[in-house]
Image (cartoon, rainbow, N blue to C red):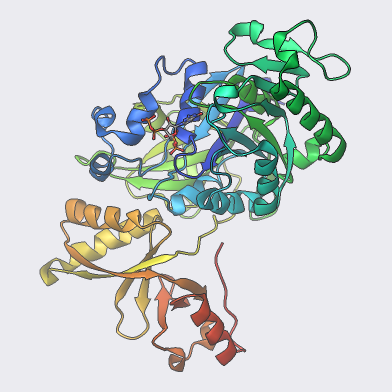
Length: 525
Ligand code: G4P
């Protein structure tokens, strides 16, 4: 066993944050960068997300600057408590896309940020569903404790009911908003007091769960209520079970305030302690590729084109599964069996690109690409063939009909469309009758990005006719029958020529199922 590889792998924690917009994902990411010393001031990351001025030095896509939001996800690396932490950002506003989902295929754990004033919101639920299918650990941070939010018990109950996961409160708020006294920390057997610095903020608990020593707050109701709740939880609540945390059946729940930083370090400390390091991954032949195997392997989970509009460059984001990446290493691309030299690589730190020299399992590298890579591609070093399973495709929810405006530019329209579809943020369909082009996506913004890029990068102007949201189902090719066509569905083919039906809504789908009981409808993830 290579000692260095072992140590590097054990150090790594690779995760994504899942949350609804405005729950505090950016703020908590920023706290991680602050405690890890990557940034010195607050506001750095928020500038990236929200105002275009903070973006001026980087050459991200124009549309991203215009909209002032983060369209594309990036990766940040932080050293914290002896760990190398990779935070893989998931786009979370209207820019929600397949990329957001696919990012979750490249991480070993998820942090779920919940706004204590809102509870479980729709986008959190959607992302959680993808994560829970992977069976990876989910750590919950209930945020905005400095505001008057909902009752903690109610929030935890909602989490369990809406998401179907068991919760284990690691700490419990003593009050909230302006009455926030601190946290009753069940995991560390201590209180964490608000408004105190350093170790002064901690008060150890005695054997009865009471704060040790004389303190004025001991007569307060927020203290006694929290203690009562904690006792109730220890009798009636779930048990702390490491195995159930590891396979995503039990989520450790933390309370805090990302904005003020209260409770954040306690959360990070437990997170790096409990979150898993990169583990083995099975390839399509059933072989287990260990994270500590000497040979480099990895897979591409995201491709992003033209980050610098001056060049037609693309960046393929690859998650390293095993071995050691070094700049200039030669690998084989499984799909084409061609060898490639990984000469140009990049990594994203806050708002600047850095060149990576060495990386290990769990790390994400950006490979400069001239059109070699596709989403889901495996790369491996040496002669032993490795191929990781294909990444899931996700069922699109919104559709537009797209037609080129200028027939003279048909060729660039087709080239642009093909390349952008290959990046995987958008899916292409043709109608069964008429061969018209339809685009499907998970988030509305993808259409705007698509239109903009087609125009600016391929000089192809298009008309987009919104078709609204659809319920998309695949059918077996032998079941296809033109008579299935109705005013409430569209018969189409996907880009692999597989038949698809786009239903107006669930009702139209149910009606179809009654009418065509023998036709099996399939859904992607
Ligand atoms: P997101 O990335 O999940 O979309 O959320 P983000 O961190 O951008 O936070 C959304 C808003 O919530 C921001 O306010 C942010 O300051 C605020 N926020 C985050 N964490 C906390 C917290 O612990 N307590 C309180 N009270 N607020 C919090 P904003 O007004 O939209 O933006 P800004 O003007 O502060 O930048």
